[in-house]
Image 1 (cartoon, helix red, strand yellow):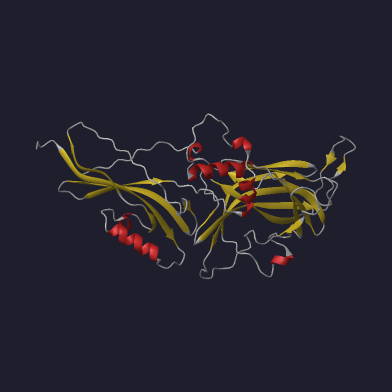
Image 2 (tube, helix red, strand yellow; image 1 turned 60 degrees about the vertical axis):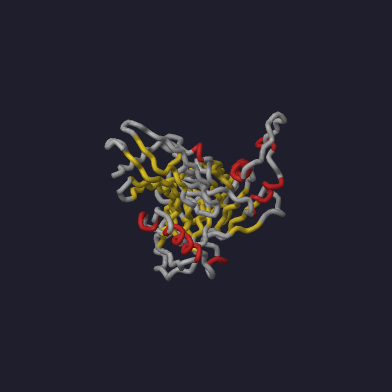
Length: 387
């Protein structure tokens, strides 16, 4: 064999999902089986990346006994199904889920060389959620292929999930929320649909007509809520800066899918009297985007909160439940007339002081994954120096 010829003994590839958390977990039988499976292969992923392996595919052999001449190249294609039971890629406060493709190769009479390629995994929407049950019965005809000349073939589970995702996020189900406090009616908020995809804008409208309390200004924050599902060690109580407390919060908020009285029911708020005895767990909060408006003397305005493409949609595992919500902060005042007319210029003269109160309200929303083709991801090259 010529000296300039290179010989690679083998190369294999494998997909791993890692979990890194500060939660107290117990070693499960599934984790032990995965560790035993990985230990019997050349890809000892446990020692390569810090974290616990919770999902691993079977290693696939790319080639064996490969001989390359100087300047010669070989290209190999690899495809793998991401396990359905795995979590999505998530970087949270107390827990992380991340995926990596591990490529290993070995030169003759040399040690094994590995290359890890990180990938992002999005959750596939499930059809078993209560807010999606009507969608499975009422199919959107605009999204259903009706061409009789198309060749009939078996539809994959992924196609069914994406078709279902389009139905869920395309349906409009306006809900009206009556906003009021102990001093009277403040306004009405309309949310056009409860489910959104990554990259969409959450659009709503606020109507202050016939109000008894003026809304001076308000802010809407899109927040991600990370809730642990297992009992954790006791932590310090929330500080005064947390959004749990407020100077004055909602006494009642009502919601209706329309304007009929039969569909009207009460919605819990963060400061309601019925919640003070048994406060709901807050978890860890992350504010993603914010919208702020000054709305004094405004009869109607709109709210637009963008959803970035880099965030993780709503999902749930055995350790954590990740939810999304809109956090409203209203600044209200009982002063209905803003100043007095100026007789010289004919304009309003703003008051020197304005008594205000603050109240907060949390409205849950559901965020789903977008089509991966719609998410921009620059092409990246990963190199491995084989010694």
